Image (cartoon, rainbow, N blue to C red; front, top):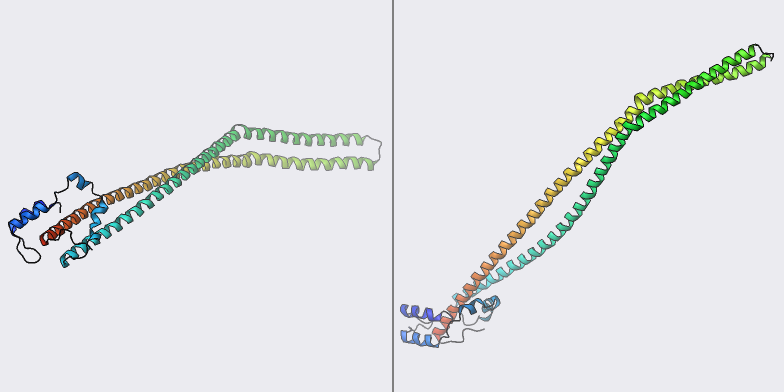
Length: 301
């Protein structure tokens, strides 16, 4: 009924007919215009709650024509559909917030694990480098010197055993002891000399193996470990970069989803305003029809 003063002149000009088929004269329209309440201010119209506007559809029902019932049902269908859309939007927004919180926690845990992995890989690489450097600068030469001392001690022992045997043979050659006693002492020394010669031969072989096989192999192993730890550190850094890109992509996806929901909410607000305008227009049309039929109370259920 708020736009009734604007519609009445137009109705008078077109000589509208009432629902009963009676033609409304300009005099009767003027009387109806004096009886109609003044339109509400624009500020009050803007302040009308959305629920009050849409609840008009629930307050009408009886006394409507088939066309008006169809119009009301169509508006009510749009209201139900919009309510469903807004409920789905609220649920999607809640799920997005929950997923955002979960992703934030997962990213924080992943970053902490990456920091620990990076620190561990860097420590292992430093230890491997120190081990290789120490072996090359200190351990290798020290083990060679120790081996040389051991080999020299074995050679000296062999020489002393030989000298002892020669001394015994010289001593027992001029001795008055029996041949049996001399043979026992000399044979014992000869057996010790044979063992000393065999031991020195083995010791010399171990010395060659140490210089030609063991130490080069140890050095190669340490250098290989250093290369492996360097590759492991590089892999950790590459995995960190990959994880960072994946996290950024996940955050972009969440931001895109939030933007989509914000735009959807704006669309819903526009649909709501459009629906409210349609409902108010329908309300004014019913008010005009009721005014023309002399039913100022309107069609109430």
